[in-house]
Length: 381
Image (cartoon, rainbow, N blue to C red; front, side, top):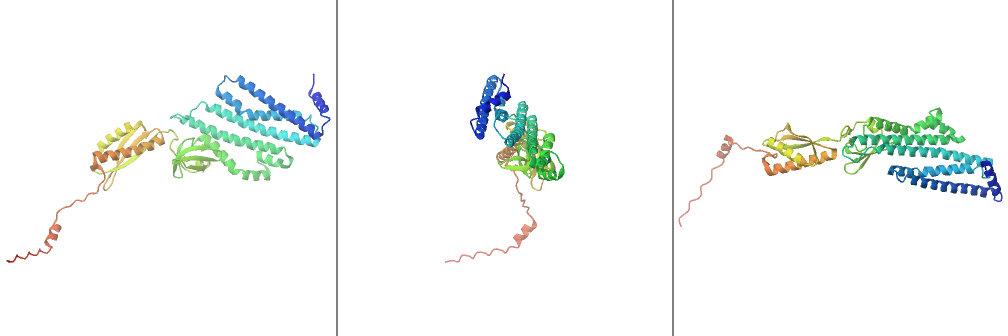
């Protein structure tokens, strides 16, 4: 039975006619072609075996296709390097390059495995439903932890690759461990990255914000659209994007309208005259709320919250399932209440009163007027 040594000897004898560079090129090209063909055959066999499985496993094969192809190529090059007629120095450089390739490939495969695990975990939760608080909680944790792990894998992979190069080995050690002057420089250079990395992990654990949370940041109302490893993207109500550093949500106060539940109470303030029929307005508010698709049926209250010089302040408190519905419901309550007051009870709208009282001053003004001169008598013609 032929061994690897005999096969290598036979191939060298077969390529003895060619120059060293051409023989090396032929060996590596043949190994590359064999690796690609073997990988393609393996992928087809796996796809056929998983044809009756669900969509996730078929997508898994697609996502691991590139790392698998690269692994096959590296293995083929490693197997072909002893066969190629290389000098000792060139063979050392090739083995070093293949070692770095294996380290980077391992990091790539680790990140792919993390992505697959995150996708498999999130299959149990749906974000496209109305009551998606638990799903958004897990989605936020998975996304932040995935980015944190990806950053960690990249740092470790680059550090291990640098440690294999003698000229920059200290930088690789400094990247993996905090020690020496070089590590201090690297630590200072990576301080923003590391602070945001730890902030992301803390946000994933404590969750002051989650994906699609309704928040008020820097006076702007919007929804959390994306949480990256270094910043958060808030989609403002007018379609602008507010980009905020990740550490902002740990160091500064902000409003989160969906921290525990997406349901909210909306307030609509209405100013009316003192002659307004409060009880009739309260019944009209209940009628408007029941007819609105934005009302969730929990709260519908009208109260007189303030008395001013000329008007009463009425607070209409209504509840909705989320922030967007609450905003629309508040606008609807204002519009329909004002329309009803204009049509049915116009005396309830704010107005300014001027009361005229007869007094001596008025009569005195009349007495002080000069008497009218008598008309001249008509002279007889």
